[in-house]
Image (cartoon, rainbow, N blue to C red; front, side, top):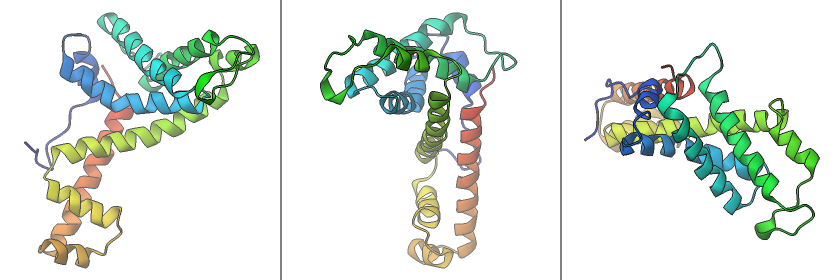
Length: 207
C-alpha cells in the first residue's frame, strides 16, 4: 500500500540497528537493494571483470553481516560512507591479489602489478576515493528515487516524472492528468522533498 506524501521514510539509523538481527531478512534485503549497485559499479570501474565484481558484492555483504552483531556506529570516528568504502576497498584488493602475475584472465581482465594492488589497498588512494564519491552520489539518488517511487501514490510520481525528467510545462502536465496546475506544483514539490530527505538519510545514518 502506498504511503502518503507526508509520511516519513525509514531512516538509515533504524535500518542499521535492525541489521544486528541477521534473521531480519526484510532489512537485509533493503540494505542489499540500496548498496549493491554502488559496490558493483566501483568494483568494475576499478578494473575487475564481471565475475570478480559480483564476488566483491557478495564478500562485502558478508563482511557487513559479520560486523553487524557488535557494530556500534560512531560519527566521530568516521562516516558510514567511509566505513562501507573501506570494506569494499579490501574486497576489491582481495580480488586483485588472487590474480596470478602476468597470467591471462577471462572477460577482458588484465594482470595486475604489485604497485596497482598497493594503490587500491592504500587508504589514501585518491582514485578509488574519487570513484567512490562519484558513484555514491549517483547510486544514492537512484536508490532514493526508487524507494520514494514505491511508497507514494503512483500518479504523484508520474506528475513529478513528467515535470522533472520529461521537462513538461506545468500546464501541459495538468491537462494530461486533468488536475489544477497548482496540484502539479504541489506534487512536484512534495516528491522532490521526499527524494531529498531520503538522500540525506542514506548519506547520514546515525545510530
